[in-house]
Length: 423
Image (cartoon, rainbow, N blue to C red; front, side, top):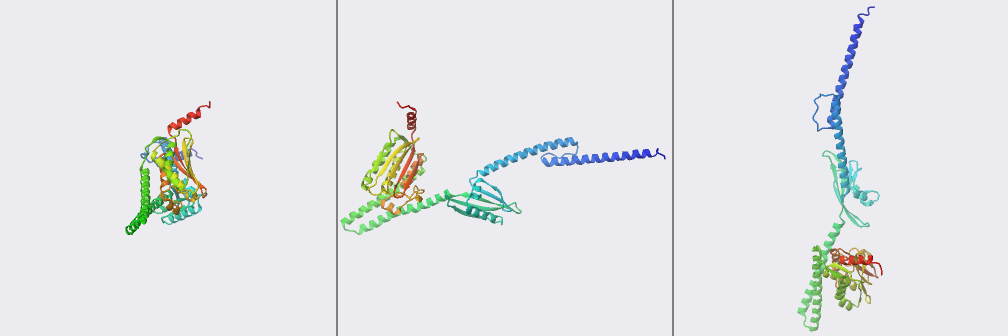
């Protein structure tokens, strides 16, 4: 057998195989490089396209840089998401977002309180009903009243969401409008009440004037003149109280001077003395011990205390008394007016400081009140950085307390007395 001719054939075949393997390796390498280039370009769309030159090392370097930039973008996106989530949870309104299947994808804290397991069931049902409508492409809104406590009024608005071609879910916005509704009701009541308060004495004056014009009996004329005087005084008090209240509401900060609390109490008691004596209701004044000073508008605070005393005398039963006291509580002085009269029903305690609000309208007409006294007291307290509160039981009386901050001089004196050891 001639082997000489076979060797070159084997060698040639081996060379061909090696060439084929090399070609496959280079082709695989080029494919790998192209795939790496594609991945790098997709990771970093800001970079210019590669011209195909350079080996794996160059592509791998670019891929590494692209991955780093991609990680930075992920970090930035995560930070933006965290900031948006924090801001979303600080919204004053509740927000619920659902997908096209009606499942919650986003809900802030306020909405979770209202629609979650611990929320009001009727409220949650109403919100989900509106959200179900959004999945059919329908908007809706509703006002819900929660009887609490506390009582609240919610306005709910739901709208569908789409991406321009198809529905992708819905969103509901929940807003607490309790304060807005309360102010709206107060404004409406105020207009109605002030119209009535002014119309009543004006109508009475007109009727009395007509009667007097046709009357010839001197005694009757004197009685009618007394009624005219009474109605005109009532009208004057209403207008004066309205003016005082409007000034208090418009005034940013009252002018202040240092006044001793016992002087303010004495002024108010003296102003009320004749009315209390005529009603047979004594005022027991107990002045605070020591020199207690407050920085205040003397006229305003005296007027507020007078209104509290006037209110106590009017609603006291015959033979009763009014206790007028003051005591220091921390860095405030609490001035209290206590009566032993008819008291105030619990349901009315929230509203007695509103303008023209009356617990017993029939009795208020008889006593001649304007319905503005307690509203004035509240505004005086707020203007001086204080507060007014009430405690009451029906048929056992009421205690109104006006609390005002002590002046700096009184605070210093109290600190000194506390730090000085007993001799």
